[in-house]
Length: 209
Image (cartoon, rainbow, N blue to C red; front, side, top):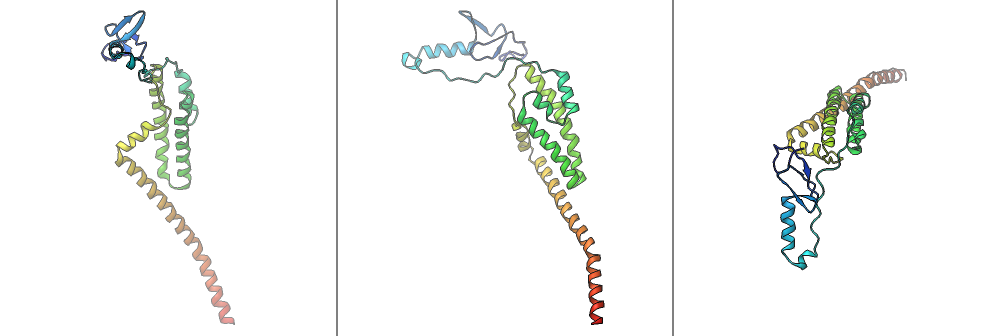
């Protein structure tokens, strides 16, 4: 982990107040507590404003890092290979992200079987994305970084790349329209012989009558 003030230096301590990682130069020992210079300056500013201000508690900031976990790489590999995409996220505790990935995978299979073969390209894309993204998230968790359980980063990426999102929607729309037209054509093709037989029987019986 790197020092928050010196990204090129390895961190050796963390601030007891804000939990930021610090190098030796940025660490200050105050009565046995390891603090960063920013927290010391903030404490001095609060103290200098008098008793009325001291009665107001300082804002509580969420810690940027959590206690380190050790996500087993071998088990993550097995979950990524032997189970549908999304199981690897669930193994790491990211249930929402895993459910979305798994639903997307099975939805792609459904679209291939019911709409058009073009959706088969989505299956390997989802699989490889979940595989490599899973190991990327494992590295972040093992470093102690907090990882949100959701797909906000994916949605933000799509919003930043609107042409890609529009292209995906266009492909889905074209495939769906083609499937509807194909179904209509098959229905008409099957109905034409029946209609011709009915017409022939009508002409025959009409002449006899």
